[in-house]
Length: 367
Ligand code: ZN
Image (cartoon, rainbow, N blue to C red; front, top):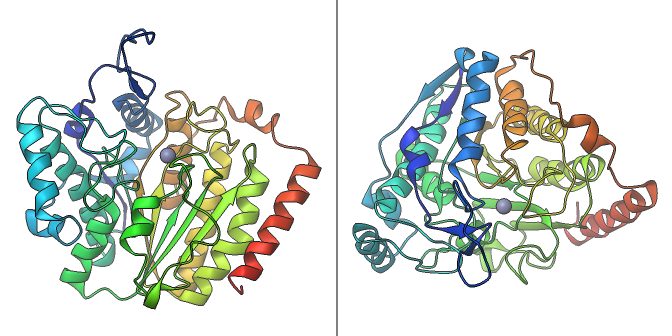
C-alpha cells in the first residue's frame, strides 16, 4: 500500500493581503514584494516541487479531495462563525480574529484544506494507504471554534478527526503537534475529552502568548489527556528527540490510541523567521521514524497534516525527510543546510538543563 499525499494547487491561491512578515504593511512597514506574509504559498509549493524533482512523488499516491462539508465543519465550528467567514470571504475578506487575515474566496479554500486532511485520515483508516501527509493550507492548529488565530481559519485536524468518528466509529486518537508554536486550538477543542490525547511540543512563550504551559493538563473527563512540552528557545535535534523519548512515546504507549495524527508544522527548523529553535531535516526524519515505530507497536494508524513553517529554503527539505520516512523511499537529495544547523546546536549544559525540565514534566504526568 502506498503513502498518500493530499495536495491541491488551489490551496496555494489563498491570499492574505499585503503584509510584512506577519503584520499588515503600512506606516513604517514597507510592503514586501512577492507573497509578503510569512505564511506564503511558496513554502508549500517548494515542498511539492522538491518531492517532484527528487522523484519521490512517483512513489506516492497524490490526491486532491472534496472540500469539508458544512456538516463536517459544524462538528467543531458554530454556525455563526461559519456564516461570518463565508460572508467576508464573498466580499473582500478580512480578519475575524487575531492574526488570521484572508482574502476573497478563502472560505472555499479553507474548506478544501480541511477536506484534504479528512481525506488523508479516511484513506489511512480505511487501509487504502499505509499512511499519509496532507499539505493543508491554510493551517489549522491555532483556530478556536469561533475565533481564528495565527493564520488558521478552520480547525483542520479536529474537523477531520470528528468526520472520521462519524464515518468509521473511531476509538481513541492522539494528536502529536510538533509545530514550534503551541497547538492552542486543538488543545481547547479537546480539553475536556478523554478520547483525544493532545500533545504539543513548542518553543516556550512563543505564540500564542501565555498558553501552552505544562500545567494545562485537560479538565473534567479530559484531565490528563492534554500534554504540553514547552521547550527552551535554542533547543535542537537532541532536545526534540529527548522530548519524544521521555514524554511523547511513553504517553502514547500508555494511552494506546487507534490513530496518531501529526500536526506537522516545520517551523522548529533552525532557519525559521517566526521562532528560535534549531531542528534540522534530520530531526524531522528521526521524529517521524520514532512515531512510525510507536504506531506499529500499538497497531495504530499514522497520518500527518501540515501546519506552519516559514523558511522557504528549508521547509522543503524537512518535509521531504518526513515523506521519505513515511514512504520508506530514500531519494538522492542531500539537505544542503544540514551542516549549518548541526553546527549551531546548543552546548551540553543546555541539554542537561532541558533533560532536567523533561524529567520534571515526566513526573507531573506520572510517566
Ligand atoms: Zn507554527
